[in-house]
Image (spheres, rainbow, N blue to C red):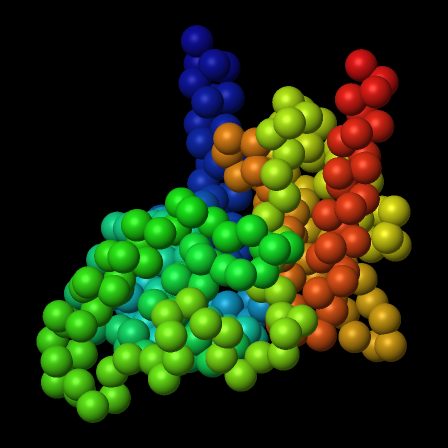
Amino acid sequence: MLRLISLLLGFSVLSLAAHASLPMDQAAERGDVAALRTQLNAGVEINRRYDIGRSALMIAARYGQLAAVETLAQSGADLNFQDNNGDTALHLAAAHSHQPVVDFLLKQGVNTQLRNRSGLNVLDHVARLANTSDVAQRGDPSLKPMAAYLAKTIPSLPQSRANTTGYGSTAPVGAIVGEPALFVDYVMVDVEKFHATPAALLRAAKVAFLQRGWTLVRSDPQKVIGSYTKNDMEYRAEIFMIPNQAVRIAFLNGYHDTRPNYLRNLEKDMLLELQLQATRQ
């Protein structure tokens, strides 16, 4: 019995040590509030930039981790911080339909008119993703409720009413502002017809990256991240497995306006691999 208690105590100490050493960006993604507080108490800069220039609060918002967003906001994180693409935490939370996080940020008085590199504020950004004329993207109908919610809510906010002269986009909702016709924010891939298992989708994503000469940076059951370097420029892209048999392929560090063919090539190779897998069954 004493030996068992000793082993359990030893396991608890190891677990606490691992918990305490969890980097802030990973803690934000997982919503590990205790780990975030440990890092902040250790003096980690709250607005430190991680991959794609995102802060911990932005990462937490992207993954819908409300408790982490609240903790970081209460600790003094910049709610209007912008990443390398010019997106804010509000852009990220809204684009992934994380309603509780969106509501929290709006209540905190975030600037809803900040524009990303495409010249889009959060309302136009989400509307564009929901209703796009780009055949390669196909649009994301699941974002239409969020676009409608923002269109209704933002004008009624105190900060919007106080600055009505500056409110609203200069272009129609959903339009592409200041970007060339080649702009591709992400590519949606319809893979439902293959009836592929999550493992098969993951394997196809890895093959697509490797076929095109990308290096695999990270892989988990829901996404694969690849890196490709050309002419001293590093491109990073993510193949994200969306529930209900859909896949999204997107750049992670701001080259979407110059190399949209990279995303489309990954789409072609992934579909080809899924077709080959289907013939082997």
